[in-house]
Structure formats: C-alpha cells, structure tokens
Length: 188
Image: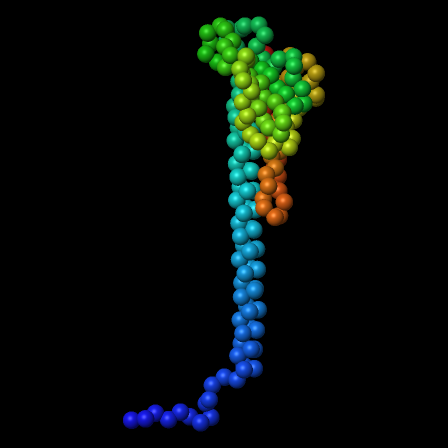
C-alpha cells in the first residue's frame, strides 16, 4: 500500500520558517533577560540578608557586653565605663565572676578601625568581629537622656552600626542598625 501526500500540503515556505525563527529568537532573548534579572535580584537579596544578619550579630555582641558594664557586686573602684570613651570607641569593665578582681576578659573595648568592628580585651590582641563596616558610633546619655561628658553620668549608650557589602553589578547593600543600651549595672 502506497500513501499519497495531499497535494495542497507541501511543507513550510522559507518566509514562514524565517518568521518562526525570528519569533523564537525574541522569546529566547526575553527569557535570557528575565533569568538574568532574577539572578541579580537573588544575589542582591542574599547579600542584603547576610548584611542584616551581620549587623544584628555585631549589635547583639556589643549590647550583651555593654549591659554588663559596671557589674560590681563587691563594690570595687574603677568599674564601669572608662574615661577613654568617644564616638567611635567604648571601653568598660565589670566583675562578672564576682571574685573582686577585674580579669582581662572583664575589661573590654569595642572600636572602629580600618573599616572593621574590633573588640579588645585588656592586654589582648585586637580581634576583628565584622568587616566592611562603614560607620560605628556610640552616643552616651545621662539619666535625663542628655549627652553625658563624664563617665560617671552615663546611663544609656546608643550604638549605631552600618555595614556595606558588594552585591554584584547593582553596587552594594548597606544596612544600619541602631539600638539603645541601658547600662543597668552603673551606680548600683
């Protein structure tokens, strides 16, 4: 048995094939652009989430330690916020183990240096906690929320930390976190 082709159906013309190819090319170019945008968005969102997590962890570390400033159950002298505090530096001590002596790990300094947040224990090395820091500032307030100039007057420390990380072609992502730390152990 021999099959006969329909004489009116002889295939596609060159023009029809070119039109179909042009349409497919436009659709493919659109899909590539869409996938590129999705990939850039994904990268940016991942960087933003990472920066947010880094900023929060840095603030958490500092606030936990600053809240302990002045913890002094045995009423030692020179416990609390030290005289060398500044807008980019906080230095304080506490007697966490209640042994009557301020150990090296009970004398802490946080500061901003070379685009990093650093922590230093008395006599110890400067430890980098966070890289890509663009701003770290401390404000010191008294009991009336006025700027304190004397360490004995400090009751609240306002900490602001800004971190910026590159996010591919879209530039960088910055996040700032600011919190008030009430120094509950000062002058008890």
